[in-house]
Amino acid sequence: MNKPKLWEEELQYRRTILRVLLIVIILFCTLASNSHFKTGNLYYGILEVALVGMAIGLLFIHQKTPHLTRWSAVLLFFCFNTILIGIVIQTTRSFLFNWLCFIPVLSYLLMGLRTGFVFSFIYLMTGMGLLIWRLYLPVPDVTKNALINLGSCAASIWAMSHVFESKRASMVGRLQKLAETDSLTGLHNRLHLDSIFQQLTKGQRGQPTLIAMLLLDLDKFKTINDNYGHDAGDQVLMTVSTLMTDICRGGDWAFRFGGEEFCLLVPGVSSEMAIQIAERLRESIAATVVNVDEHQLRVTASIGVANWPKDGAGLSQLYKVADQRLYTAKNSGRNRVMGSDYIRSN
Image (cartoon, rainbow, N blue to C red; front, top):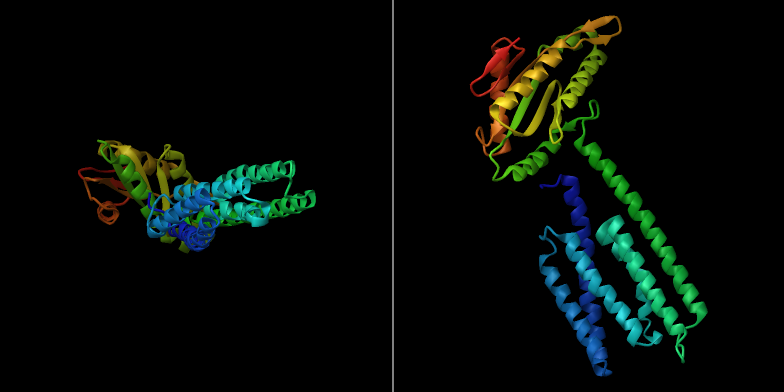
């Protein structure tokens, strides 16, 4: 699915963090492996060289891969396990255990709230468990005070990372909703149309059914604003949006493009079924009375229907055909549905 712009920026944020981490891993593990080879710690040095190789490979693909979270999880899996192995085979004088504090930070930044929590829980608990195990070795090289201090520090960083990512994810979610939703009616807005259309066309690929676009415009809507005020006009728009939502099946998408123009994307329907849905919507709008103060307002709608891929391979072509049919319906007397070979009025 094509992501809305805000989600693309969200992914870019994680790609930048991953790039910085990859560079740090390459530099640090190159130096550390060289040191381990010199001190005879051959196997751990080889493990670090392998981690460097993985980091170099990811450095080439991280900007374009669509599986960023998956690759981040693979990298952190090997990185965190390398830290745990080091805690087991090396003395605490290597200070490798200090890297435990970075586990929650990296987990949440690269993988989000849920997966970040799982990684943090597994690897922090395992790391602290290994350090407790070292405390009870015949010749322990760690003290209880050091364990308490490290555990408190790691727990504090974990808690702060969780709160930060939780608040950040909530804020991004609210911004995304604002970016894709019409504030008056609660329907999706035009900015969200392209990503939804791409999602639906990919879902329909290889299937015999169509995607219908129903483009709807309220007839003589300006007279309502002029005669009864914009508050009355807003009430009519909200009523029409409710009627559209009521007629939607699961998987249908309703949009307001601005002003009195609306759109429905209806997947999995034939041309005939799309016309039937448009007729039901037109009749429902025409039969509805909107009560505004002491006034009872009625409004009608003209609807143009186009079908993918028959009427256009892309969104712009499909919209153009639906728009032409919409204005054909208006020029033919309004309160009409216009399809490829169909026009009907009440």
